[in-house]
Length: 145
Image (cartoon, rainbow, N blue to C red):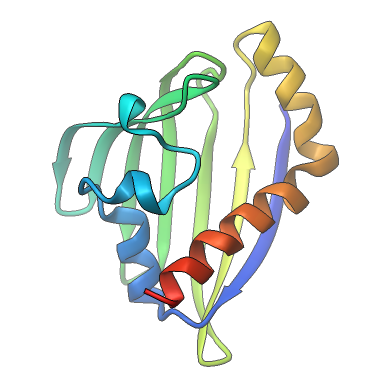
């Protein structure tokens, strides 16, 4: 089961980072580079959870987001995907640090297809670096908004 872990710092407060994760409005596709409009749908949502489909033609997932603002956590569980199986998902821990927030990220993938196995093989090798850069760019864009 491929996984990676990294931490990114932002000047955004923990509540601002949480809002970035949990705003499922139409602008979401503009904030997150790995989501396109054709593969974004909000199925249902409540005060501390949402079920959405996100991704691109290369890889999409139907996911259940759950969050706890007091604990500073966000969990994303893969429900269905063209690449990933049960047990896949993201975990975020938001910790106040240095006038902003340290965001600890853990990604776990359970490949479901040959394409998933090929992409999954790269996660332990380059995942933290590539995904960390991509995530940092999302945060920088939000900081300047």
